[in-house]
Image (tube, rainbow, N blue to C red; front, side, top):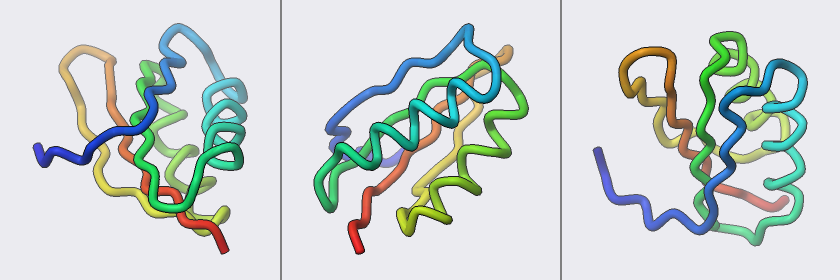
Length: 81
């Protein structure tokens, strides 16, 4: 895994949709251009929905990484338009 220089970690493990998606959007909107967010999820549907939402907001998915079991890490690069 690359070292992304994470600015903020959003831990939404234990939450189900729409909470992980909503919290990720909130974090993106409150972040500065170029910041890297690390989103921790364990709800499978969030692994599909969060990347779609990130792209709609104009930001970039750097990596979606499975950590074993049901834990995932989603790395987001914030891009302000």
